[in-house]
Length: 164
Image 1 (cartoon, rainbow, N blue to C red):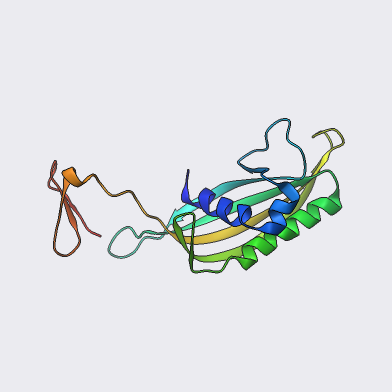
Image 2: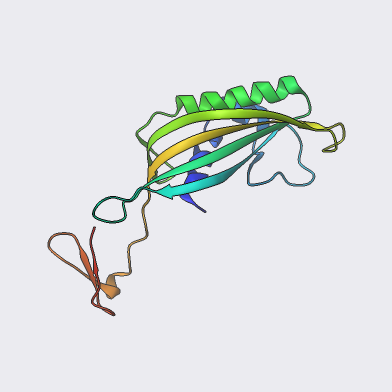
């Protein structure tokens, strides 16, 4: 699972205002076919690496979207308000589900309805958030590299140097 998805899940699943309304109906990408409502889906819109003059940086920027669904507009508004509060209350910088997040910014919302969804139609509120986080890649197995004094690695198979 990608870091932004884990970050969003961590924020939403730990927000009492959100879970009191949806329970565990927090779904990456889509809502299951027979789901009860209200419910939430969330997805990554884009991830952009932050290049530096010396090469790739571990800092990345992600745009994520959180979609709240309910059978009444009032319920959709209430749930989206709780989602916004969860993100507003997330103190940064901090670690969320093993990812270090530097900044979270609200980036707007959109209101729509689908009269063909569920039994009587659904109201949807989509909110976008920008996450600035530090990407951490898994360390190579100890048998495959030599750790240098300066903290860099040399791969034994190829001799390539990995600069940290």
